[in-house]
Image (cartoon, rainbow, N blue to C red; front, side):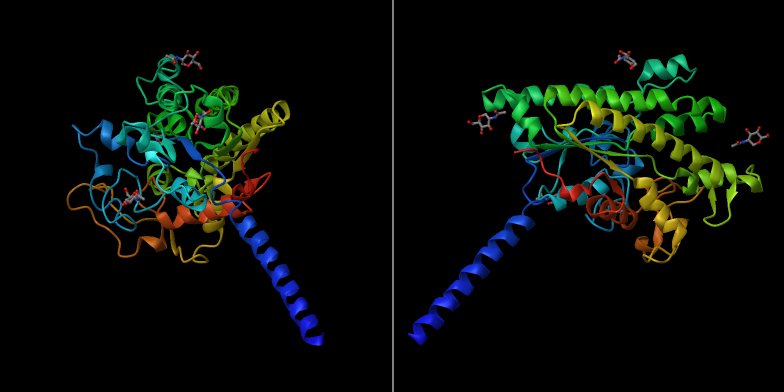
Length: 374
Ligand SMILES: *[C@@H]1O[C@H](CO)[C@@H](O)[C@H](O)[C@H]1NC(C)=O
Ligand SMILES: *[C@@H]1O[C@H](CO)[C@@H](O)[C@H](O)[C@H]1NC(C)=O
Ligand SMILES: *[C@@H]1O[C@H](CO)[C@@H](O)[C@H](O)[C@H]1NC(C)=O
Ligand SMILES: *[C@@H]1O[C@H](CO)[C@@H](O)[C@H](O)[C@H]1NC(C)=O
């Protein structure tokens, strides 16, 4: 009797333990396997191989060593030494390798989703820039949406039921960062600062328009990053520091204060617009990814995360750009903030991705806590 009792309670304990394990396993698989795919849009901060494929005849440095040195061991078309934020997000959700849309052709090539982001992309299209006296014909967000609609038609046909609603409903849409180049191009062409500042509403309109369109198509979960503190980018520091007056200089971080305030302004207009979208679409989750805050945490405490050369460039210099023969490269990219003067190192991208996935650099919830509605 006593023995039986003992047996009973221990099997009860086992059952409790077992259900606990099941619950634990269930909660840990919440993130893993929660999205069926990732569709991603953006610029060089997110491109995983589109640009180098479309410019193969006119080889760009992004397709040459030492790009990709830290993680992939070879150039992949990513403008960094290794993984980007989108790679860490895909890993977290068990969807490794969101294929660049130009890197595949059949639906089987895109089982985990597709990445439409492309180096040099702008939020606005060519007509906007022509209207502002700038002769550039960019890969715009409109171009990426065009590719996306084509891709979706192809997927729907392959599934033979033609419903794209379900396809998009289970997906995570990563929209951006995009818009930074709208400003970069203007600043580098000497457009007056206040005139560039006036671009912000048009850039945010483009982003919000894409979100609206994707919601109508069936998307339910978005992550939308803001702009980086580009006043801390070595390229900006070189170009504008010579002229830069002391009053335009943040002595705590060593960054250019005006350009960082510009990024903050963009981010304020963007987050206000995202609030509006959330109110209009209460069934849709839109996570704002605070790339700015995550990256500033590095500049505000350099060395804290091992990134001791936060404002320095690892690869290339003013004479030989990164990816050109003979470019200088640092020994340990993981201690640098910038890989090539304009693009962060994998180490920085990891800090940003962690902050977005697990907090505190995401709102209203850390990205890893979101899942599509079942
Ligand atoms: C993911 O991409 C990297 C770089 O292109 C490649 O080395 C790796 O084999 C890929 N993994 C899978 C599972 O396709
Ligand atoms: C360019 O953008 C403007 C403003 O969003 C839009 O009205 C126009 O249709 C776009 N042009 C093309 C060719 O997509
Ligand atoms: C289409 O049908 C296939 C096979 O029945 C199914 O697996 C898939 O989820 C469906 N897709 C959509 C978009 O409804
Ligand atoms: C630096 O200042 C000079 C003289 O004011 C001006 O012509 C030039 O465009 C400025 N350069 C930059 C990069 O702002």
